[in-house]
Length: 319
Image (cartoon, rainbow, N blue to C red; front, side):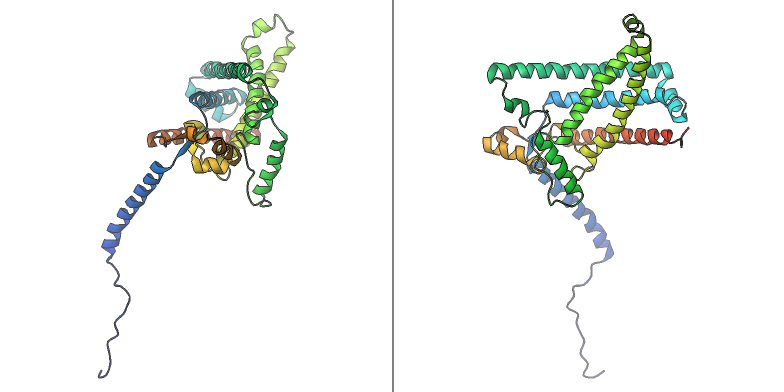
């Protein structure tokens, strides 16, 4: 048509689909490379030493082993327990594994006791035992501040508080976990020894002590399993800020930015005293992070599966 003008679009011409398909893997690889570069540049803070990491690994392995073999005996009439017992080589084999993991438990328990006594001796020789050492931020003894943090944490969970509590070296739930394990090993371990060496103990105590030991051992163990697989897993790995896995106890280190967020009171003290420079370490190798993550998820998954089996068997759904 005369007088008509061709309208030229100012928009850029769309790229062919083949070029877009080729660019997407390149962009993804570039993003992964940038992420790796950020990880290499990120500084970490050491929170636990090799001894603490090793003891915790012993706790995890022995506890899962005791839970697995103990639940087989406790729920021996359930089909899943019978299948697990068959997989382990029968009930006698499960009992043997149970005693082996009990020895591992006593091993890390007394190693920890020896370490505490040794450190206490060093403190007494160098500085003396002061109130700050007993009730200070490095102590596992509960303080009034822990109860305040407990209330602040739940207020934050419910949206009634804008920020989480300013935790120090230890949080209130870490202290609770610590004393729960301390109490559990003492009670469950003592009752287990009575059942293990019943001939010896019945030379000292009347026979009804065996019945009491069985009730205490089984009920306290079931309580410990439920607590670890529900409360401890949530507080450590599934809570906001740590989901889906907190690797610090497996690696001994955590990113400095995360340390600053989770333990602000301790971090500020480390900066103020200059100790933060001594705690800074390079990032752990990627293979170590993958190994820790794989082990952590395996332990977490095993615990949650056992928890579901316990609940379903208690409710009578599984038989």
